Length: 141
Image (tube, rainbow, N blue to C red; front, side):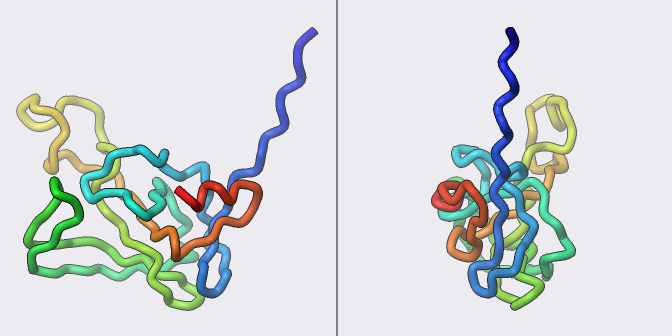
């Protein structure tokens, strides 16, 4: 006799911590906590997809030295600020250090590099979003 499938638990949804607006961020689009990114992942939640209709985006281009981690630094920082569309609070940034957009060995067969286009990674501060739903432990990552 076959076992009935286990009921699916609803994925956590995230909202703005300042105003409580639903950001339509789903835990199903969340990268695992231990995933390595060049710009780091400490104190943040990283998503592979977001609903852009609930967020504001603004380009940020600064020319000055900056350090994200010991292995990731530079002179010119290009990134995009992500704010809540309802209240305007800064939630995080978009980085271009997600998984490569293409399979293969990269330029000259030397593996993925900055030359290989990468998927965007939406990095939200843990303090800027709140988890709603059954999985409040996901917000503590």
